Length: 224
Image (cartoon, rainbow, N blue to C red):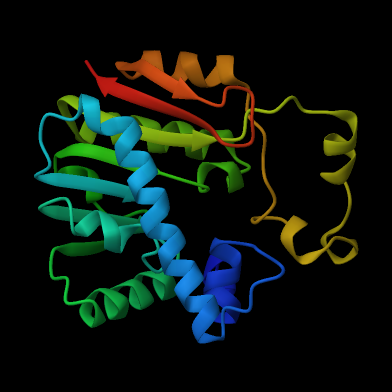
């Protein structure tokens, strides 16, 4: 079992949206979880919407149980939702059915989600958890290959400088760290220049960006 599948079985909502003061087992916690997804969706589409030319098909990397997938599915014709966890995908399907949404197709990350073509791609608080940069490179290559020409991607990374305290934390064994700092869930910082080169090498043009060198550095990209 991969770590994210373990997280999905333990407390999916917490590991997706790690607020220590929210009890996701309550009705109020569930309301907060999904309303935050609606708010983030409106924010992301406000940022990327001016550049979108079609809303037929969209792709999400790191869909979890559907916090962002469900509100996006009310905007786009078809959604491909990708995750590394079979349990997350199973919970997403149940949530989509409960919401009366039939236009969402779930994929595990190693399945052929990139055999389809997309007008829009998004990923939020996902790439920041991937420690192996080659996995990010592969995702970007596959995303770019699956995008229609002129298609738009909104991708978030943590590009804060790698401080001394950050480097030390990464050397500490998991059992000594708090729940939200353990491997797989901890934030991994990336060089924005490294990312810019990666995008350019995959024919992805940066049309705008938000919060540079921040934990929520968000790039809006166009496929050339």
